[in-house]
Length: 63
Image 1 (cartoon, rainbow, N blue to C red):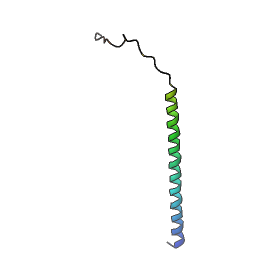
Image 2 (cartoon, rainbow, N blue to C red; image 1 turned 30 degrees about the horizontal axis):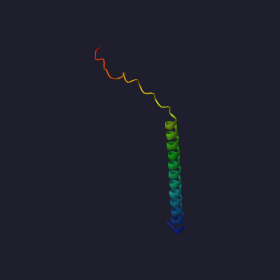
Image 3 (cartoon, helix red, strand yellow; image 1 turned 90 degrees about the vertical axis):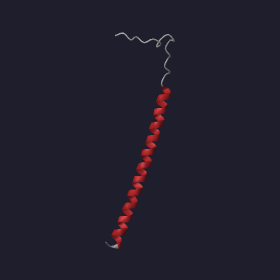
Image 4 (cartoon, rainbow, N blue to C red; image 1 turned 60 degrees about the vertical axis):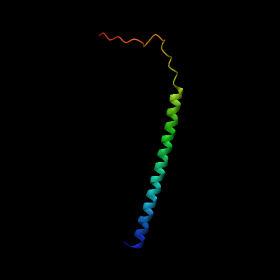
């Protein structure tokens, strides 16, 4: 290996690392946006009305 091929390899590795870092940053940003949208959807759900107090107190064990 000569000096120019070593320098070229070093440059290629550095560019690959930068590309990986950019990819991870974009992925993290996409996950953050997805989390925000999921929280907005959950917050937009209507409240479930509670059942009357006489429901859910007895269990029918006969089949």
